[in-house]
Image (cartoon, rainbow, N blue to C red; front, top):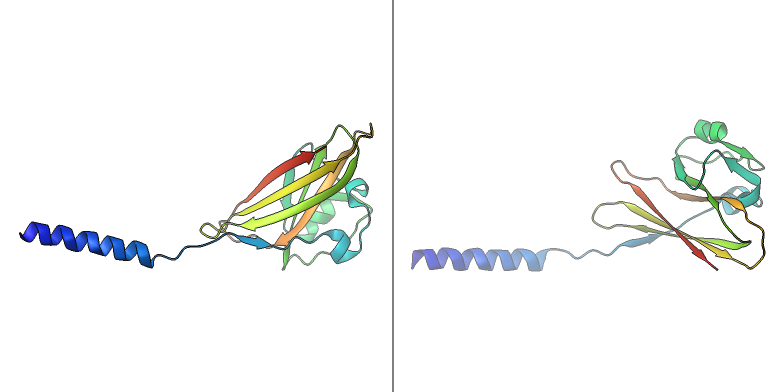
Length: 150
C-alpha cells in the first residue's frame, strides 16, 4: 500500500511538472544590411572576401578592415551587430538575395537562411552575401542554410 502511494505521488508530481513547463517558440529576428544601415551599394558584386562557397562571422572593425575589400568601407557598430559574410558561386544570373534569421528559444542558437533567386541569363556570378545580425551570444552558434531558386 505504501509503495502504491509513493508511485502515485511520483506520477502526479511528474505530470504537474510537465504541465507547468513553459512552451517556447523560436523567434524571428531582424536582418540588416550594409546597404540599408551604412549606404553601401551593390555589395554582392562590389565587396570581396577571400572565401570560396563558405562564410565567416566578423565581430570587430579591425577584422572587417583586414578581411573585406571593395566599394564598402563602412564603420560598423560591432557593439550592436555581428557581420555574417560569405561567397557563393552560381551557375546563372542573380535577381535577388533574401535573408531570414531565427533564434532557437531553448539554445539561443541562430539559424540564418540565405535565398538566392536566379534568372535564366548565362552569367555565372561568384557573389558576396552578407547580413548584419544582432550580436551572437556567448555559447550560441550560427547555422547557415543556402537555398538557390531558379
